[in-house]
Length: 120
Image 1 (tube, one colour):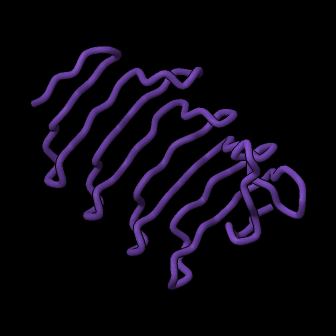
Image 2 (cartoon, one colour; image 1 turned 180 degrees about the vertical axis):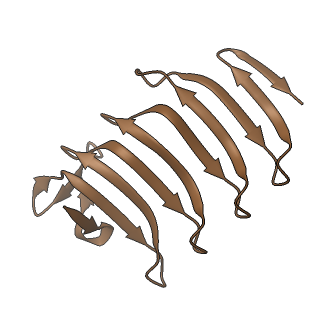
Image 3 (cartoon, helix red, strand yellow; image 1 turned 90 degrees about the vertical axis):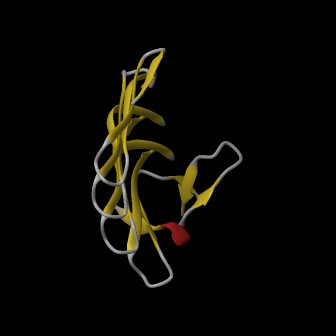
């Protein structure tokens, strides 16, 4: 099931509800023009599954996967011009393993691996 974010609410534990129940499915958020700018999958009101976000232009802004509310695997962010801005990897428990960042021209500006940072 997919619903609009206006059809859901957060409870005091930050879980998403729809029609008085913890929500299972996708919640989409639209900007003022009606363009989808965020799509998050939930299970029992917690982010669980794919997450994507877009700039109002329609270009992808962010993409990753949640497991029971925790970021896992690869998460990517893009600059508005479409170039990759950041790539982070997380282990199954949500601990960040690596982070690489690029400027809007595509030049690598930072590389971090569990506990070490190298600015370029």
